[in-house]
Image (tube, rainbow, N blue to C red; front, side, top):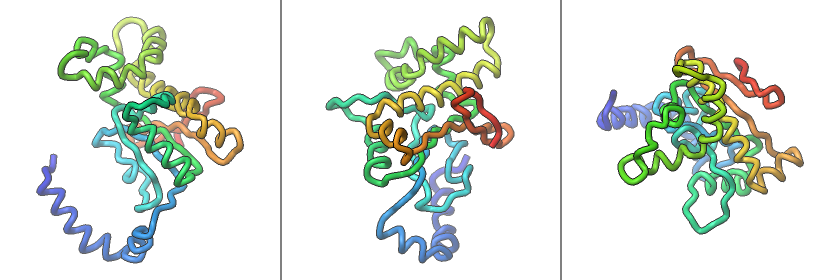
Length: 212
């Protein structure tokens, strides 16, 4: 995998080609941003939303974290990075859509399903363990549907269930629920299959993902 030196080479190439070619766009973006879509995706290096959606700078407001999770609404004095980004996108940028995009072979979902970090509460892995606690109810449902040895179908079920968890939690935020109810905001679930490069969209009424 490329190190930072390789990334710097890429930056210099961008300056010569991409930035120069889109100089007008960058001048406009310097004045502000007005994306219509927020994408909540996983931090996994294989699932960059800008690459998958072939998007230009300024088109998406993106938040990435382990397993593309959204925590429930908790108005307390703790630090809430995802919630702050969500609030900014919805109430300040006024995005019209929020997309939660899970993906195949997600390490966070796999860790939840296998309970990989259950013994790491007081040491290395503590933050991961606590974060993927958000998936506990979904994990129990997946395990009930897949008794016995875990196979790829079970892991994919877990990955798709994680998207549904985040969508449910999104609706606990009052300013998300209000805007969805009035029709000014739409929530979408998506799943990107790394193995074949296919994007699947969630039909919430049926609870199923289908190819886009």
